[in-house]
Length: 123
Image (cartoon, rainbow, N blue to C red; front, side, top):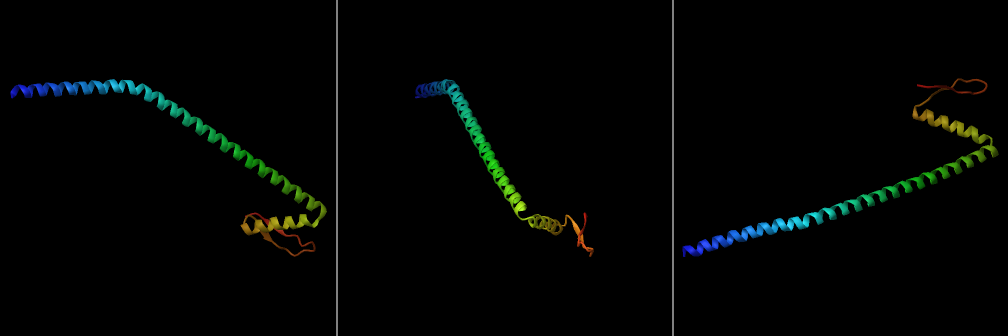
């Protein structure tokens, strides 16, 4: 029975060595392919990220262009209103100063005069 145990021990050792060599051979075959696959996926991810970044920049530029066009239209409307209604400028002027006073950027002191002109003081 002692010989059987030695034969089994040798067989297990050889099986272990064979398994270890097969594992090394498999790793040597798989690793280069995995590296190529990994680099390919990294490249695709970077390309997709660049495309999304480009799309975001394009959308931002469109939004800025639309905003500029709307702003230009608003300026044109205000200009036409100022030409047609001269008192509109005075109203806008008073509204600007009213907002400045409310925000605390400017203090207004009213001194009664014939012209009713306010005196503006910066804090």
